[in-house]
Image 1: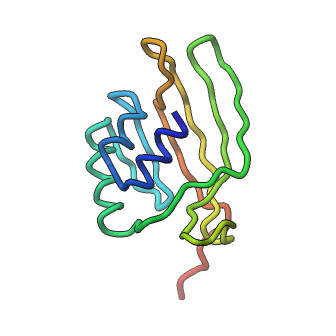
Image 2: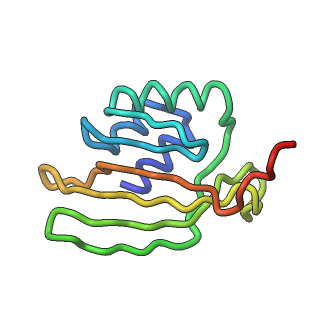
Length: 125
């Protein structure tokens, strides 16, 4: 699932990105936007790809998986967006996300995803 999501991100394909989620999933983005349902995630992510995210790659620094049952897991992951040709994360691009995963029809999908900046934005004056 993580590789499918990273590939969809790199191709800037909102629909393929959303396909890694359940039909009724929730996503809270890096900016705090709340996208609801697979269709809402596809539309919202395509807007971000078309407007703000340009030719970046997702990079995972660490990942911790905890199983809450045979068909449910919680993943806490730290990573960033890499702007090629960079191979290291900039401090302002670091984020930590929490994923609630469910297995449906033998396939793991995200049911809830919340992404948070590691380094807070500076206060506005």
